[in-house]
Length: 438
Image 1 (tube, helix red, strand yellow):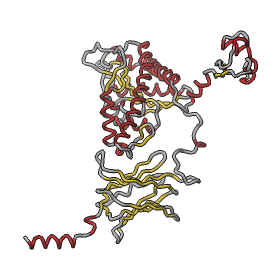
Image 2 (tube, one colour; image 1 turned 60 degrees about the vertical axis):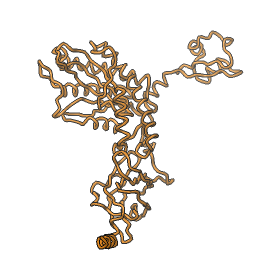
Image 3 (tube, one colour; image 1 turned 135 degrees about the vertical axis):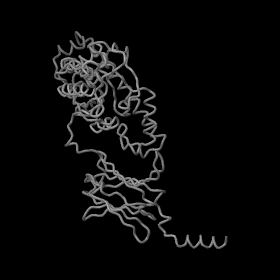
Image 4 (tube, rainbow, N blue to C red; image 1 turned 180 degrees about the vertical axis):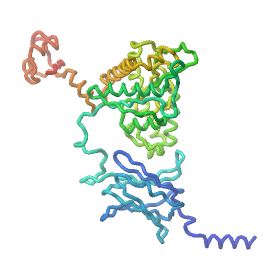
């Protein structure tokens, strides 16, 4: 026994220092609109130092008492900020990682504790340097239109090896019908001032359900619409339906995001969740989901009413379900079952170009009405709606109608007409006047 203990002590003495060092188990790269994020997976908390060098530009990351547990994949380490990555273990036990840069950056580094299926992580965020030395968090205002379009993501269900439902008479495939309607809907939305549509798929190929959500987020969509055609064993079933996310679906998605929020590498309401503690991340996610669900229902109601005018609707109200494509926590979303492809009459309708056009127009009209009533800030629709609304003026002491009319460059007669005022005697200090647009 004593000899065994001596052998163990000798083995520990001779054991390489690297056996006790932190292991770098992998590295990942995320590219966000305003920064690049490099994430090192490590097996324990680690001390590190980050500094920049120029001529050429590079960022040095020294990891104390660390070594690469396996060969790190550096082939994918390049984007608009990074041209490459290299690393080497130094004699003092430090692992030095060098990021070759395309331009100067402002780095930010921090450690994340284990959570969401990950162990310890070292995060390096790279922000583009501006003249003042502050991180660049948005594109130059000169490169952004003053008023942006409302963006609608139109998702044609199924595709490729997934044909969806099939008609019993004409053998019409759901994937074909949904793409045809989606293309018509995009054209109608694009024709409206201040509105623009993007397709999640443009041809006969399959797109993963969560990928569809990601594409909508990539295009900064204000609304997501998924187009489908229903089927049922009873051929008499008919009518369109509109779905929004169920409470159960929202709860399960919230749990999923909170469990793997860094892996998702997405933004919720423009706020990153991966470096927030559980309580704060949960609150932020709940706020985002609540706003998105409220907007989803409002938009769906406008579309549902229009579909009801076009023909029979299958249900008496908006339906709720846990469809994956409805689960984006920061984009209002709806799923439209345009009719029952299993019903011979509706199969014929859904295959008819004229009916497809009327159907697409009913959806587009509903969407436009929703956005005109609740235009997102910064959009052309918001400006147009604001310009349509009359200005207001609070009457101050000593002001007369003629003075106010001259100030706003409107006729006195028009000012009186809008406010139903016959003469100056009927105005008072503090009264609110509506000023007509010229």
